[in-house]
Each structure stands twice: as structure tokens, then as C-alpha cells.
Length: 301
Image (cartoon, rainbow, N blue to C red; front, side):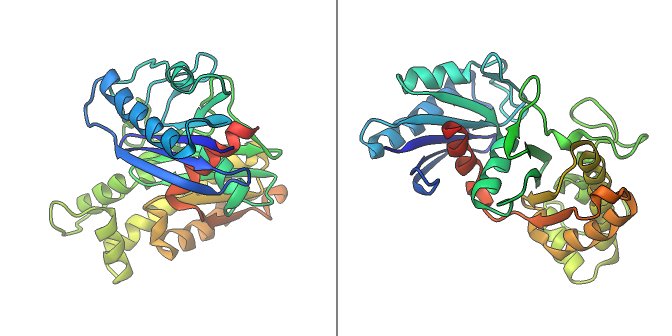
């Protein structure tokens, strides 16, 4: 029997069916309704579940849910920043009602990404892992001692809000100087524009990466600045959690050496403790499937 896995975010709602080994045998994706009410968003989730159940023959053995956060794990509710219609939405109970009679487990999407990469991706064999997405924001999740670490409320691993500039820019979270304001794609572009990068108004991180690859000095400085901020954050989290591996995915990470080369170089300036000398930083392997694979793993724990 198959496991139903869900990955719910601000742009897409995905459902997958995974076999006992974690291989996805079916995936269905629908767009998240922009600005939709709580019930409009749920209707899409419910329809996506129905699609998967039809393929599965009506029954599954368990359900794992990866959701954008913040989440409230004890209550099973979610309040994703990028889904404004959901504030304290009882996602776990709604899914349990839609798929009755089987275990339903919920975690943040960062935790599920970490689980997916740990199970079948770049994190295989790591005991103490931070998995991150660097894209329009910076998110993450932890696998410590081989098990997901969710923290008190389910939100452990929100590394995008580690402060790396004490007098830095105001962040959407309400804080200031978070690494997200230094390294996330829109913030890289914003910094480059204020420092003289000339590009069309609709140019984003992809165009900035192309400019950097072509040798544009301002674009290169933007990536180096973002990578340095990430290195400072990684060193801090690694020291607290005694990490052995960091896996990075997301749109900005797809720039390859533009991000990873200066990041690894800067890490030596921040991760000075002897027990961090073997810390490795590698690209993610599972891409957009990491959340679904991790949700399947979560369901089987």
C-alpha cells in the first residue's frame, strides 16, 4: 500500500504517492489560489488529495504533510506567511477527515526537505544535517542524530531569520538584519540595483546570476555578499547543533559556483572551532521533490 504525501506552499500544492522505499510513483500539482480565502485554498488541497486517492485505489497506509510555516505542531495548525488566507488553519484535522482511518503527520516544509535529502538525496549518511532553500526567501530544517528536529512548536530550523547584520535591513518577519535580507533572491537584486546594476525592471535573480556569470562586477559582489551572510549563519547554526553537513537547494543555489565558491571560502572565516573543521556544504539533489519525499518519510516514522 502507498503513502500519501503533501507539499503545500504559496505557489503550488502538490500531492504524491510513495512506495515503501520512498520512490514517488505518482505526483499531481495544482497552483495555490493567489489571495484565496481559507476555504478556497483548502478546496484545492482537497481536490489534490482526491486526485491522488483515485490513483491509489482509494486507500493509503499513512499521510505526511509538508507545509509552509509557521506551524503550530501541537495543535496541528498552520499560518503560512505566503498563504494569507490560512491563519491558525487546522490542516492536520482537515486532512485526517479527508483521509480517515490512517495516521496523519504534519511538519514544516523545511523539516520535510531535510528529511527527503537525508533519506534519498545529498544528505544520505549524515548524522547532523541542516537542509536549506535559498530562493525568494531562506528556509531550512534540521535532522539531528538521524531524526527530524522540530523544536517546541514545530518551527525549529527557521534559519532564514538568524541575524547576520545587527544594523541591517528590516525583514518581513519584523526583525532586522536577518540572513534572508542579505541572501534571498529578491534581496540580492535589490542590493545590486542600489549599487548601480543596470537591468530591465522585471529582471530578477536569474538575470543577476547571468550577469555575474558574464563577469558583471556589481552582480558578482551581490552574490559574494549573500554567500558571506549565509556562511556566517551556517557557522552559527553549525556551532549550536554540531552539524556535519549542510545541503542547499532553491533557485539561488542553482547558480552553482557563483554562490557555493564564495560561501565555502567565507565559511573558513567564521567556522573556526576545531569540531567544525569537517563541515561540508553541498548542493541539494532532489529539487522540487524533496518536500514530498520528506513528507513520505515523516509519515513512516
